[in-house]
Length: 417
Image (cartoon, rainbow, N blue to C red; front, side, top):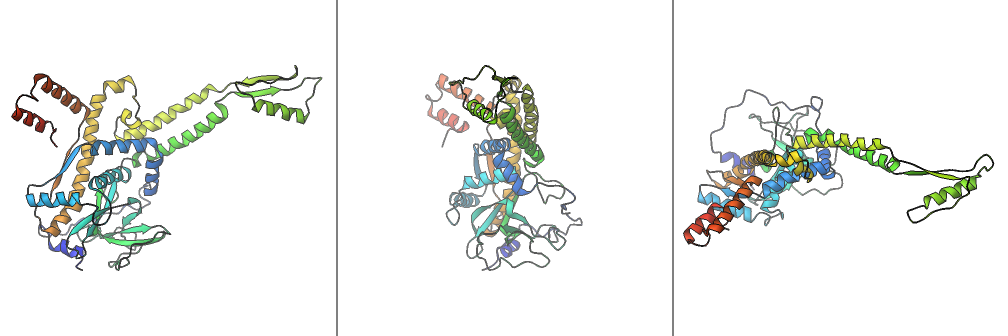
């Protein structure tokens, strides 16, 4: 079998660029504190604000009309067929499932990985498979720096596999290029050449090896919020309810231990439908809960607002609550800027997909054109205006009078299948 990398290198669109003079610097663990991938995943799963914010991004994006576009009809036909048959050759991942995973991982980790699966001859990519970003890292040298080629591109990746998981059989799984050191710690590993794995990045800083998603900037606020909620729930459980206390006996009636135990048992059984009787020298009273517990909600609101700010999403969208009057008055304004945020994520992810997925497919197929994605994000104001236009069409009879006009209106409003 001819390696897929040989095909990719032999079918370059342009002549090879000159070697860069600059060096891409790998951020060392001591130079910048980053949140581990597993912690970011756990934050998405366990924190409702992170979970809802990223899901609103993905729902807003995936609800928009999207399609592959290429001027060359042959390219268009090939990619339409590729999208329709995705999941039939190996995995069961559908086209929309794959895009959904791309956007979710981009929001959570700042990056998403996809394996490009070739046919047995290695001269065509026939399937795609989503790869968990938590277990992927760059192949590195003996100094723990990312191994790069003369063009400053990373050479490959390692998939770090936890103990107890079976490894997909592969003859070249442990075959490493010169200068690359196998990862230490953890379980087993699989080396993956750069040409076999697509990495799509969201936001980058510095030399861009380790991108940033939507959770990391507010991760610490999320941790503090969850700690505050835990402390607040414990405090409410201990001090947020009335506590009944009994004063037993007087100077002439000293209670013994058994009498004290009996009184405590009676108090535990008291509810709204029961009462107890006791000697006149015993008295019951209630300790009211402290009003200061309500002030503990202010820090929670602050931390949640910081998370929403980092996500760049209107608060009413992130919390699924109506919010205050000011939020309602400016909802259309906020919706417009949220649409810009959605389009920014779409443009970044689509750009990465064109470079690391579509382009390799085109090289192997001999296509000169790399297709793109047309993505239409619909905002609230757009839907409202569209509804008003459709109502006017119905009232004027335009949708029923002239068939040609009816066809034109349906096409312009996206009502045709």
